Amino acid sequence: MFTSMLAAVDPGAVAEVASGLKGSLHIGLAALGSAIGVGIIGMKAAEATGRNPGAAGAIRNQAIIFAALAEGVVFFAIFLAK
Image 1 (cartoon, rainbow, N blue to C red):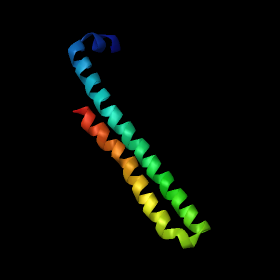
Image 2: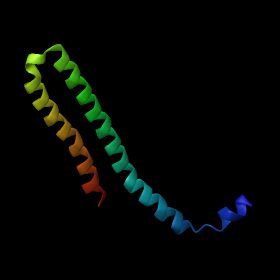
Image 3: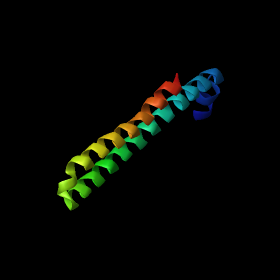
Image 4: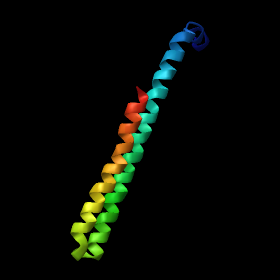
């Protein structure tokens, strides 16, 4: 039964689906990497603020800047997909 289903599949349709997945896959991986990076930045910023509460303002500012840079990778991936 499975071999008859495979025989009925149009190779052009398979190639079209595969190219669509490949185009979206790098965006998903960029978003995943960015989310992990922002999470690590937040974790380390909270840890640094706990160790030195007097530097909380400077730590917060640097964390916001680095989180924005990490999220910028997703925008590059989206723009390169088109």
